[in-house]
Length: 99
Image 1 (cartoon, rainbow, N blue to C red):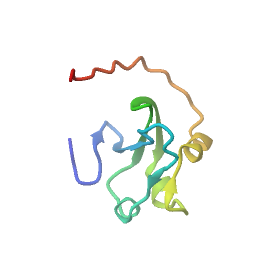
Image 2: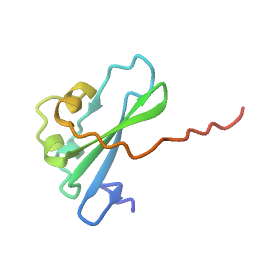
Image 3: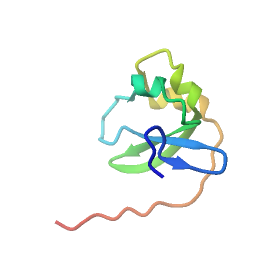
Image 4: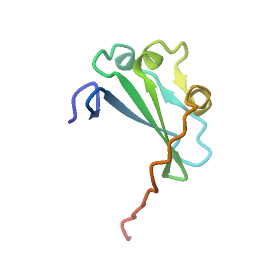
């Protein structure tokens, strides 16, 4: 499913997936857009964190957290403060196309 306002659909969730900090030393967070604030279809946002271009962590929050966020950027530290449950669901295999 790839709707306008969410990327993943489960039985009870419509999840918008966003990525944060792909490059080393990138301290920028996710810039909350007007589209995010007006997104009425998504029930949750999943933020995927990267370290050295490899995904390392996912934080799932209620969409209201994003819609009502008082600043322009949501940073990893902000999400770490509210995402406390840790579920290890497996390892990630990273494949790279040979040059």
